[in-house]
Length: 434
Image (spheres, rainbow, N blue to C red):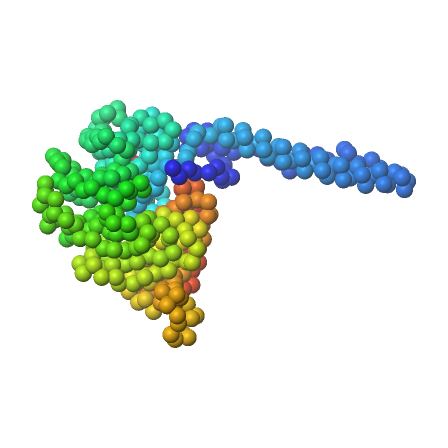
């Protein structure tokens, strides 16, 4: 579980949960004149120097003690606000935040909270998934004080009338094992368990359409194409490092037709993503050094992108809306941006200009490195996606971290990358009804 760590950010007015988050603070805990005697003689002067050192040490100790007490008081006065998971919606214009205190829904640009479900309504939530910008949410219980089970997916209809939370829960899918991921499109919902994936018609008169056995999938890896033209589903294959692709439109419900398989990596898949039209799939292995892209029609490898040389855990891979760029975040605290439409923009190893090299480093030399990158707190997991283009030659990437921070960077084709915005989304109050 990804947990938000406490931050020092404060609001000057009453907090989101109705508590005053501003506390008085002063640096003048002790006055020197209260501790240092007047200068009289050499011996007294030496004593004065000693008193000065003692007073300085005492001031530091007192200040640290005060800050510790102040932090402990603030921690006790705040409700638990741990973030358990984050997800963008299908077009990356919104993101949803599953928390120990419920659910929050945010608009990305401009950043604002569009609505929330509090703890009294839904308890602590482990997973939440949006359906575009509609009133439907998929909820899975989790965290420290769940109201719903981790083996069930509940569909919340916020447009449904009624003050009681039961009035807004319109569907429930229950299984025998914990739900690890949920994906939705306008006509289907996909529910991922550790060794099985279920596909249902949705939202009207839901019925089970498909059931796929998978390799052990503890992260619930899966992606579903949102396009109206292509109903593509991708998940880890039975063979180590492979991907399975299923065209839900051409596969008949109830049949067990074999999905197409791509041998993507030598070790287990750790991250997978489809572009908006469903024409390209990107994946990374547990090693996390390479991201490979494949054509979903021909199954051929299109390009290999190098995140770095040290192993890393990738949190997120996302395509830009027109598939011209790709971004990826990892536990190294760096968000990398790669060019896909014009791969000449990506950096190459200096050895690539040497010519022929030995087979041991040939793969390293041929890889393409990110054209731009930026950093976020390494200890805080994050998801990333592309924002709206501000101009033809300026693009933006958004990073949302579990520590409650929002980062927006703009980059140009020449690799120049600068921060444009920073905020703490957990400290933003309701701006509109959800």
